[in-house]
Image 1 (cartoon, rainbow, N blue to C red):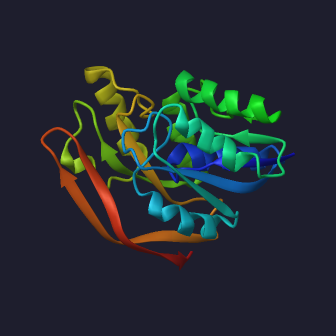
Image 2: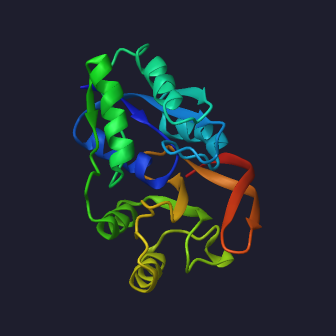
Image 3: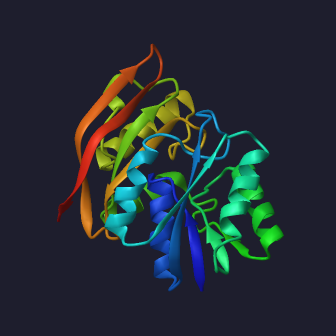
Length: 223
């Protein structure tokens, strides 16, 4: 089956591509929607400048579509880019967001193609363990919830990190997978990657109770 993958460069969208390939599907395109509105309800916005390098490392062509990020217009932008592709379906990394999943399904219905969410309703802690055991290297690049401090910015998601996320869940009731917008991630390496993404310069910004790590300079390196 020939499909396109909605791609943000974060842990879940990258892993959904991996799962789809394990199913034997032909992931022919990575589709990144770039919102002007950093508060977009539908789309990830941090470090989207790196999806080009990630696409190169993964070896799947990238299609980028800009959108203002306004609630209904961003669906039309997704429709506009997907209608040009010869595909039978779209995969996304949605885990628990009904808002995101139902709107992707709406666009797919209009195009008469299938919507696939291979991570849907999977246990978020179990998924994190699977990411690590499969060999994916993901880094936290934004934190937006109680319990997180500046020290979390740039932290790799490893077993120790997962343990600490579970402690935050117990104390602050966060979603361990970040599905409530608690944190955002960047995938640097994994079994999909022929080369690894190396970060040369990262600018961290902390604003009292939330922060971001923005990649200023990066390159691909042989593994």
